[in-house]
Length: 153
Image (cartoon, rainbow, N blue to C red; front, top):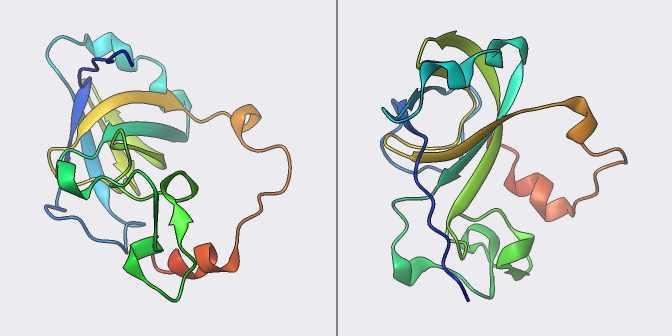
């Protein structure tokens, strides 16, 4: 398989220094563009209320990466699920995505709320959330997922 090389376009700066599974809803984070990206890359971004942040789980060790099935959060009360049926950080390509609320833009920096990434996280891409890209049908999920996410935000 061919390799894909991605370079960060920005980095996360936040008070969260270590990974935690819950209470991300009120967390504020700054996303600061790298020097190679012009300020104008953010032009017009403040016309959107929400953004999708695509980032790299940079602190997950190679030996922790899952290729098969595991219990969500290691909880055997939940069914064993394939890694692609979960949102675990220890996924094959270590890519995370989160929809966040845009609070403000300050030239090369955007401030967002609800980003579940820690200090220093490399940002791979940022996209505006448009209602036309949200699901057009009812979202279905198992009860265990609802229970697991109860305190996440």
